[in-house]
Image 1 (cartoon, rainbow, N blue to C red):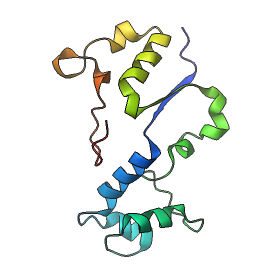
Image 2 (image 1 turned 90 degrees about the vertical axis):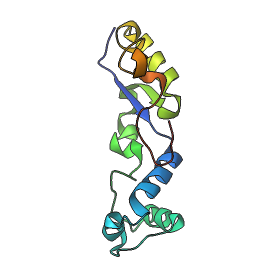
Image 3 (image 1 turned 90 degrees about the horizontal axis):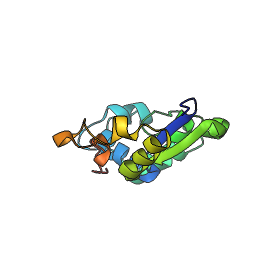
Image 4 (image 1 turned 180 degrees about the horizontal axis):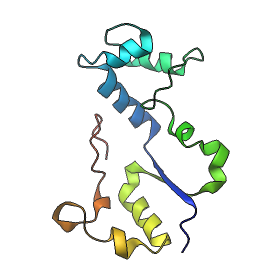
Amino acid sequence: HSLSAVQIFFRHPYKRLISCYFDKFTKGNHWYSVRLIGEQREISFDEFVDIITSPKNTNHNMHWRPQVVFCQFQLYSDLFSFVGNFENLESHARLLLKSTDLWESFGSHGWGPNNESMFQKNQASHKTSSS
């Protein structure tokens, strides 16, 4: 088997954007609003989306920058041998590891609660409680 190709997992862009908004711009967290709009205040979700999608916006923070920009997906799409998503983490991780003959060694057991596969559920905490 060859691992020379690149595999990647994405979060759903809308869920990621909503999670970013709740995490960075609500509940008195003004550090990001100062950086984005120059003011210490909460901003509405609509305002947040308008600002970050504006052609005038030059603040492309990693928390709201599109994931395809991070990995330069359009430029290097031919290098990606597998694209999975976190919403289907268990099935996509299983598919990836089986296709590289690594499922039995790394995916079928261990690492998770009660020695279950770590791929049963996305363990990361998100403001939208997405898995």
